[in-house]
Figure 1 (cartoon, rainbow, N blue to C red):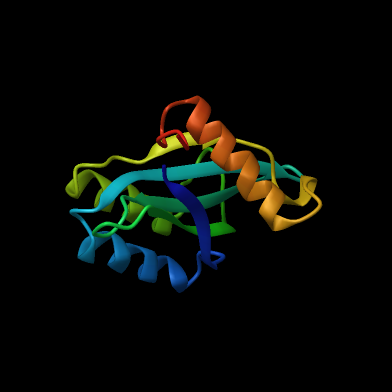
Figure 2 (figure 1 turned 90 degrees about the vertical axis):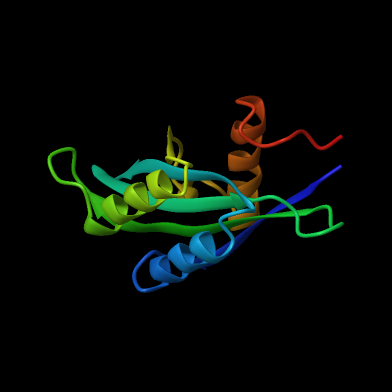
Length: 130
């Protein structure tokens, strides 16, 4: 049984490079990479996330996320999104794109993360709890 939890690094400005480093230095533990897309006020907002398998005998599965800080249009992708896609490809885990509700539609961030976890489990992108 895994305990899966989101760890928020920031909104994807400079901290997205920290996510890149986590992916590179833990490439053997990288489970999946995700690009979450949501729309608010006609703006497409992107979140980048990476899930890692538990370390050693641990049952803790971290999912690091840079939440909704990257804005892009259908015509032009953000440079950070392109770099994330390229890194995922290099590491053998091309990012999975998922459209979802914006976090502002939830009473708090933990409910938003539960919503994402449910979507990922239902689509067999994260292992079940038990």
